[in-house]
Length: 106
Image (cartoon, rainbow, N blue to C red; front, top):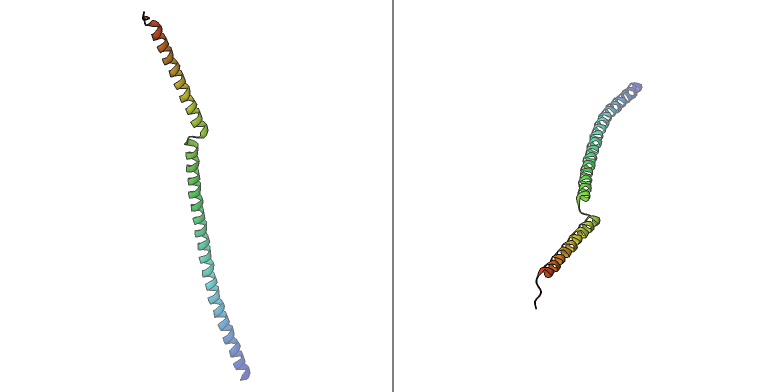
C-alpha cells in the first residue's frame, strides 16, 4: 500500500510538473511572439526615423546648394560695382562732351 501511495504521489508530481511545463511553454511561446512583434515594431520605427532624417538632410542639403554663398554675394557685389563704375564713366564722358559742345562765354 505504501508503494502504491508513493507511486500515486510520483504520478501526481509528474502530472503537475507536466502541466506546469506545458503552461510555461505556452507562456514562453507567447512571450517569444510578443518579443518578436516588439522587435519588428522597433525596426519599423527605426526605419521611419532614418527615412525622416534622410529626407530632412536631403532638404537641408538642397537648401544649402540653392542659398547664396559668400562667393555668390562677392561676385554679385563686384558685378554691381563694375556697372556703377562703367555708368559713372559714361556719364562723365557725356558731361565732358556736353561741355565741349557748348559755346564758350566771352
